[in-house]
Amino acid sequence: MSLRIGALVLLGWSVSLFADSGHLRYLPSDTKALLTIQFPNLAEVERTAGLELFQQLYRTHLASELGEEAKLPLTEVSSVVIAMPYAGSINGVIFVTGKVDRTVLDQQMQRVAKSSNALTIERLGSPPVAVYTRTLNEKALLELVPPLEKVPPRFRRLVAPYEAHVAVLDDSTLMTSLSGKKQIERALRARGSNRLRVSEELGSVIKKLPTRDVTTGVMLEDCLHPGLALVADDAVRETFTQLDYITLRIIGGEMVQFLVEVQGKSSDLGPILEKKARSGLDALHGLLPTLFPDPNKRAIIEQLIKSFVIERKDDRITLKGRIAEREWRKLSTSTN
Image (cartoon, rainbow, N blue to C red; front, side, top):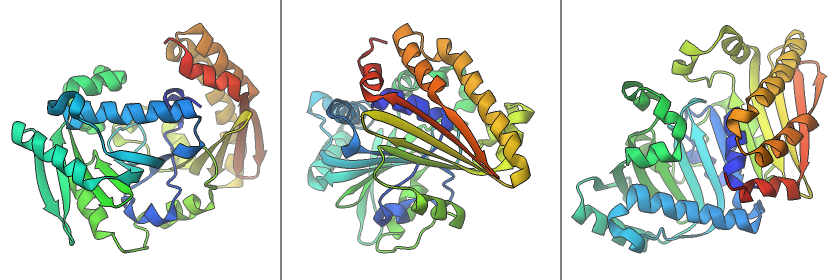
């Protein structure tokens, strides 16, 4: 599956899951929306593209002063996890699990700090860990997330970060916080603990989801960003009061499967949520020309949308769609 297109589809659901229970302790207590990609389950071309993206982000936002010498010392990536307090915001925290060479990373960060006051280094926690704080390159951020340009500058900080805080929590976990340094500090205090800091509801949903999928996700009822709630229509706001959670699974194979489950608050809301699910697919279909100007991409996504079957059992709505992997992979090779 294409990392880029998969992210676009998942962004519509604004959901995720952190698969490795050993790392669940690092998730912020205010997490309401999660996104996890199991890196080894991606096709080789997507893994390569993902590693290139990591390096690009590192050179652009954290170590731009080093030019081509800036190389993120990260190998054997196993998962990428995004935890957000609200859907509709790119603030949150990102965990990348793999092998991180702390010594090389610190050497590069020391060089950057000496040549620029845009990056600062602190040692926090016990035992102490280096925390690197860097003001983000707004121009590069807008290029990475074009829709942000439509947000007035004075409101942009409500939904987008202006600085990043980076730390290596342990031998296999690189954490980036786009929600302030406090999230790094709290994660450092969670080292050595197996206690979950997320809500009991979120924790129970996460633990039920399988880890063998390419991507798994969860979104809670109250995760709509307050800013979006102010401008959203009544139907959208109402929907978030009618459900307990939404989960998503993307399962790899010759046929890539998409499974979405909407858990309603009561059985009498089942028919209402089923109708909204059907309307949502219709609305997404109508947006395809805007979301996917490339007719080749649009045809593939249209094929996926048409494949969805919606089922209802009491208070639970299930949406099942699938598409041939050979077709899905074409999305990553399209020109646009």
